[in-house]
Length: 214
Image 1: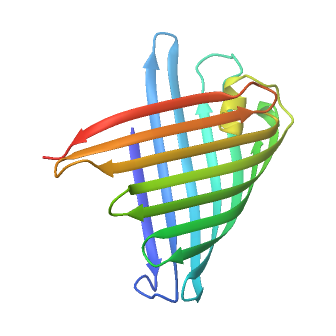
Image 2: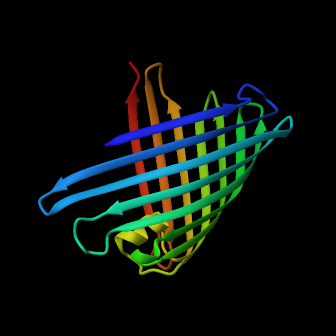
């Protein structure tokens, strides 16, 4: 397993504008009883931000991705997916108490023609809000609507990679989290996550945790 990540910042300390470029590369191999399997991922990412007014910030993110998996068997699990992502966002900040971010994301992914040639086009609208108060703690809510077009077969290992565990068609995702410090060294966290992937029924997930800060 090897991981390399490098980030170059432009005008990082400026409150008006700034940017960054990231190159990340991950590789891994596993020796199994039937042969050697390996995976790799490479990502080029550029982020730019501009503060238009005192409380409004525009950001644009662009990525070029390459994912590969090589199976030791001829079982259809080998893939080489190339893709790109473009995501503009607008953030409104009310002092340090409340922040809301809205954005649009265009994600295109293509498997190599010799490995099946599957294609996925994911368009999503995202809304993220965060509120922090001394008496109530921190509340974060996130909502995502994703419309997915996919030419491959559903419920396969490749579709899981191409669609990020979502389904062809309309997908709805929502998430709420509440963190509050109960005492000097104790924090309570409540999480609720819901999703409706494609035509499948709604999936609800809830979590609660208590942390001791030493």
